[in-house]
Length: 288
Image (cartoon, rainbow, N blue to C red; front, side, top):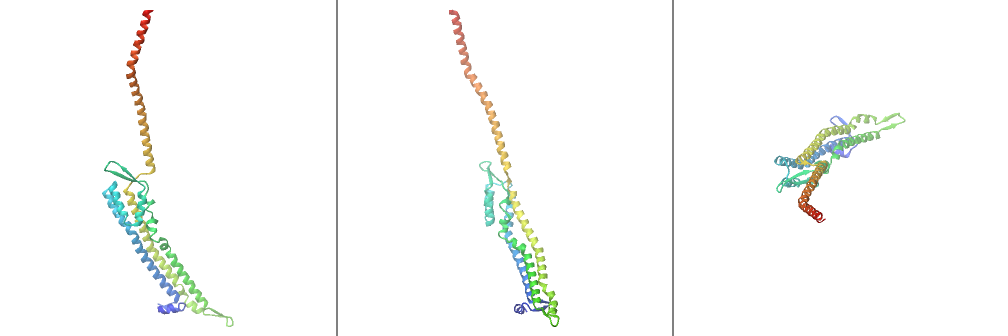
């Protein structure tokens, strides 16, 4: 039967009580096989893409439970975790450059982030570059288009066999066209059915992809205490206020100490000068 379909693609073939052109049967088989293959590939590819995210998320959650505040040791552990996958490693290197390392003392360093993980661990960078999402989401439209194309092609071939006999005032071949007309819509029915089933499977898969991505970036964000630009500016402003207050106190203390110093150092000298002047004045009055 398959050989006959290949050799006579436009001949009418009856299967399971349905008459349809051979091209309609071949097209239906192709649509079903293509849908199954794409579904299997999409499922396997999605699992492969999500595996590094799942593994990294579990290790990050374990690290977060062990260390509520990150230090240099935890930062080294994160370097090891993200080095196991090249998309994660590249995003981590970029994200690591935005971290702030604050040395509390000689043995303790606190680490803060200034940007969110979503800015560097993007969904397109981690998933879109390795999973052809646009193709998988457009596949139902492709299948439907192929089904409609084969349907119109089968109708076109059927119309080609029509012949108008002007002398006998009749149309030959119309009975064949009508008898096999239902079969000509076979590819459209198969395509619409395949596309609908595909969508019922594809939508939950990509919802799981988005959910896994959000869980992953949320795990990274929970690791760090964020310091935004506003926080940094507030700390700088607070430092300026403290310095201004210190300078004011320093000026008051300096003037008081200078006054006291001058009084202590010049007081005895001025007293002696007054005494000398008084003695000179008394001596002049006595001589006079």
